[in-house]
Amino acid sequence: MSRGELNAVHAPAVLRPRSTVNAGTLIIGASQAGLQLAVTLRGRGDTAPITLVGDEPHAPYQRPPLSKEYLAGDADHGSVALRTPAWYAETGITLISGEQVTDLALSPGSHPGGAAITAAGRQLTFDRLALTVGAGARRLDVPGADLGGICYLRDLDDATRLRSQLADASRVVVVGGGFIGLEAAAAARNQGKTVTVVEAAERLMWRNVAPVVSEFYRQAHERRGTHVQLSATVTAFTGEGGRVRGVVLADGTELQADVVVVGIGVVPRTELAERIGLECDGGIVVDAHARTSVPFVVAAGDCTARPHPLTGEGRVRLESVQNAQAQAAVAAATLLGSIEDPRSVPWFWSNQGDLRLQIAGLSFGYDTVVVRGTPDSERFSVLYYEDDRLLAVDAVNSPVDYMVVRKALDRGTTIDADKAADAAIPLKSLLGAGTEAAA
Image 1 (cartoon, helix red, strand yellow):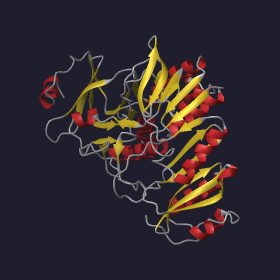
Image 2 (cartoon, helix red, strand yellow):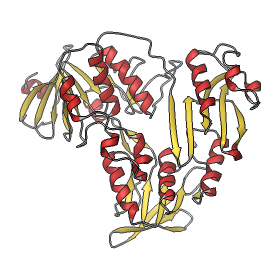
Image 3 (cartoon, one colour):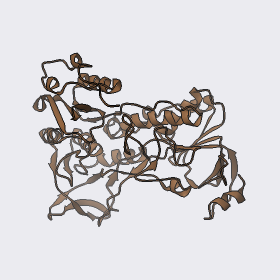
Image 4 (cartoon, helix red, strand yellow):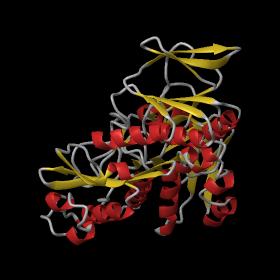
């Protein structure tokens, strides 16, 4: 595609290219999904050029440790890196770090391919395009939100900044009682900080777990010294000398703070997809095979809205490493013309200090929960059902129950709910004893 063709497809002015690179397959987003897509292409024998471009200055790295081991000081840049620098050269994958794609256009008509231009003026032409651009932290728009000491936790630089800020802090307020917020709260508390979690909803992790799990985590965090305030909305931040000193709630309460961690969710990055006319609705819309509304463009990871990975029904957006990697592998196969069964069991984990939560399946639409064990023992599991069909499990320090349910979901079978409620019966002995689950 020539410079003139690029402008003909997309009217806004673009930078004059400093250099042009034939990217072959261009993967925008040097995320775990982006790397997995490149790895899968090479693993399937694709020898064409692959270019992986990301706006962060770092090579692809693991995100889950950022709010856990990295924040606690038990991990560093090297330990979270997914590949060594030499690996990219050895596999013939061109990695471009620290360059944001500022313009993107597809070839005219029905011809596959197009071109991207980075902020540095580099033009990348491509035959196939993959968007693995992820999501950005949702910002809290209240007075004082730009004060120093107010931190978000989404990428490696965020985690490095927060770790440095925590070193000199004594009072930490965490805004948001979801996974990231509670993981950050546990890390701060384990460093001897006074920690308060402020959640606008009536319970913790309300989007993802049943009330019994929410209440367990509230009590467990408070037993360990964290103060939890529910149904509490932040209306402003106060400061002194340009740095945050307080968090003001809707009821007029002001919480003192040296550092504030805001974890109120993420927003999928759809700007580039919208720029080239892809369908977007709560994310870049893809089918079960990671295909967007343009045949030679695929997307994977947190930026996508996809069919349910087990049933193929509806449309969901999943924020997990497992989904990013599984969907990226499917996207790579699709680019190579291989349409395969994409069914996979979603799984996720959250380490909040010594509390390990493992989730398998999706609990959307549940009508029954079965609690195995006693929450007060801090070792139990909750099974979710809809019309007697097993949907998911939340396992707290119960890895065996987690693995059994994950296996049942993978097989497309259920587990008898009445028998599962008896913790004296090993869950493994019930595997396959129920009726076949809908797939």
